[in-house]
Amino acid sequence: MSRNGRPSRTSRCTSHQPARHEDQAFVTGILAGPEDFERVREWRLTDAPDYDAYLLDTAVLLEEARRSFGTVQARVFHPQDFAEFCLLHGLDPAEPASRDRYLVNPPLQTQLLPYQGEELSGDFLPRLVRARENGLTLRHADLLLDGGLYAAEGDADPAVRRAYQAGAEVFRRMLVGAGPGTYEFRCSVEAPGGRLAAEARILHWEDGVVRINDEDLDLVCAVLCAGLYRELPGAAVLHGTQGSACGEYRQVAWAWQGGGYGYVPAALELDGVAAAPGFSLGTVC
Image 1 (cartoon, rainbow, N blue to C red):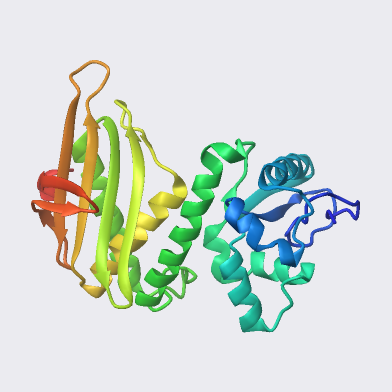
Image 2: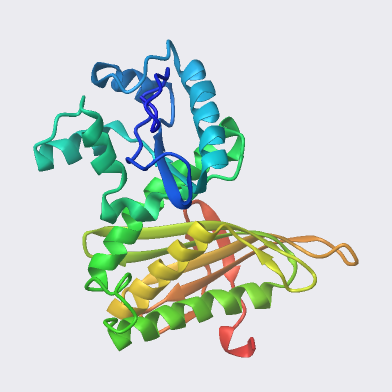
């Protein structure tokens, strides 16, 4: 059923909201691929005959929501995550109320992305998949920060706040020093409980404007923050095409080693990308 009670082909997996309120948010979960579609058949989340039809129904749902609600958000509806959530809370996966609770579960809010009319099968679905992965990493980082990543401003540990600001400044200096170009950034921290990792695609214009997805920026800063706060070993690589429309283009790959207190130039390989020592961050304003 849809939110306004009309029958619909797709089981919407949404939180309950009164119909047509532009000051409220509409939240939905989207299955990320045909395999996930097959795994949820027993729970009757949708009566679409196949995954392609499901995506068409979902696109219609999202467009209807954009006309009726002030904010439309989506996240991956992950079958394994949902099954574990229902087991933990003693819920029936086939009940719509169980899906609602899963989608609005506070620890999973970092996985939500705003929907603004993008093609689902284009970049939006891959972004949803990355947002889920990023959300899991953010939860891990928050544990390392003793819950300080999302603490209210008045309750935040000053040491966590300083570490976050320091991590954001490290990232800023890397981008400013690189200059205009199209880059990919990767960073990792060897942490208790497993390796933390983040990556982002970056477009740095000649006028200094930097384009990066908000969710990727949040993750990069959180990973760098956790490494600095816990004084953990880490690494960062910035690689891609440096140059502007008025100059030459060249391929670059720079790397920095993190030792807990900061990042220094170092030759290393990260996730298959080999890079030469980067520039000194202390020379960048």
